[in-house]
Amino acid sequence: MTPALRVTTLRATALQCLVLAGLAVAAGLLANTLAGPSRRLAWTGAISPLPAMPPLPVLAPRSAPPTPSEPAPQPTAVQGAKALPQPRPAPPVKTTPAAAKAAEPTAPPPPAATGPIREISGPEAWLAFQGKAPFLDARRSAEYTEGHIAGAWCTPVWEADLEDRLISFKAARRPGPDDPIVIYCSGGDCHDSHLLAAKLLKEGYYHLLIYRDGYPGWVAQGHPFDKGRP
Image 1 (cartoon, rainbow, N blue to C red):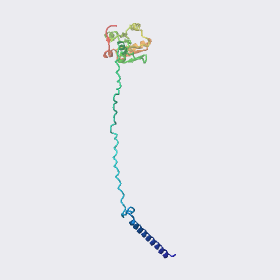
Image 2 (image 1 turned 90 degrees about the vertical axis):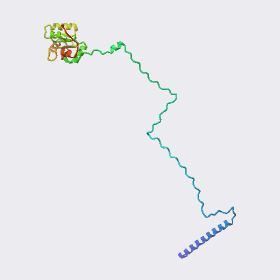
Image 3 (image 1 turned 45 degrees about the vertical axis):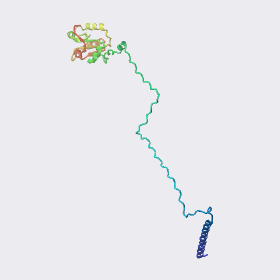
Image 4 (image 1 turned 120 degrees about the horizontal axis):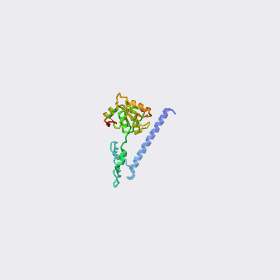
């Protein structure tokens, strides 16, 4: 079959289809017209519109959470709850006369020895005096009579009766080799106390304290003193 003949055949076939379709439509319209009212199809020539959709509900906005700056709710007291008992203050401690006397500070001990002979200051001499350590006055008897530390022994290093005075002192106080003995003179450039300490060291006493300020320093501090012959 030639191409021209093929095109002609296709055209004839399409025309026949169109004619058949038109006849089918016409037959349908005629049948619908001749049918009864109950069987007749409604024909408006246009497509009915779709029904309107109902409006969507509007959601209410959520409330914002409280900011951190807002104070937290405080717990409320439970009605009928019992309050905790408050602690009672401790009763005052009663001090008896015996306890008060025991609490009083005792006299401090005399200065400790760091060598057989050493010098001490005014406060150390006062501590030794409060500790009942014996005091030896190495000045002359006339100076002792004019004034001396209260309770001191007159032991003038330059007078002939020094040995007898030391014997009287040892018999009365009975000092041990390690017991403190305070020796003084006029202070300053006075070396009488050092001479007396050297003598006692030879006699077996190893805790000798020289009060370097002497009798003038003692009086200047307002400490007790006496006057009169030994």
